[in-house]
Image 1 (spheres, rainbow, N blue to C red):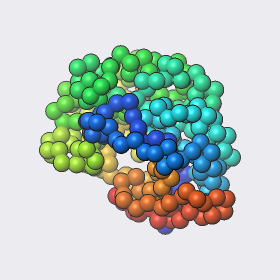
Image 2: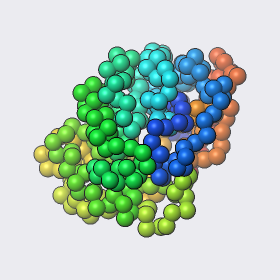
Image 3: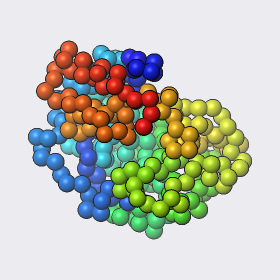
Length: 295
């Protein structure tokens, strides 16, 4: 379906929970978020109904997100129902990967084919510092489980000046031997890091400066792609600040409590709970038409 600016909106980020088993410093307060009442979170049946409505409205790709989606009870069932929704051609997931060694085979059977693993550092000490509670060995095990079970594996690394900046070159060279797409994402001044000092917000040009041998090799969605000579994988640069991609944005988001956000970074929300069938379709189409030109 087209939005008011002629963009084909076919990608839905469906948040199944706002809880997480990590406490990343740029994402969550140290104590985590307040747990919602059970009745305030979309049920498995409501999530399925939204996925089916989305398919009717032209959504072809659904990404299951959180928080951390793997901590959501019934996540395998949610994945299977989403994958079975008519019109939905691709189901993917963004996860920190900690629970993948246990769940990856079941998720694969349920229809999940692509995963993005959030991994901002290869240093055990820095991983613990950034996540407050995490263990790098668990993250690496999750990455290995992803590579063993899914067709496409991407690594999302948020660039943080003065923190993981010295690791850029080391991380890029993961792609030399591993068939992954390592995506460096510019940190945005929202949420927990809204008031961080300016020097912590690196532009993606820092990656090209640190690894000048990277060669451009096209685009993939919102990412500009590069590769090392003779590498098995690729490097993607996602630049929401230095080169915002709003004019090409093709996505909407739905929160765990059933509110549609036409822009991932705006405060505008449209209530979906309580609507069914054609009325729910109309609400989704309303959200698509309300998508702004830029954040």
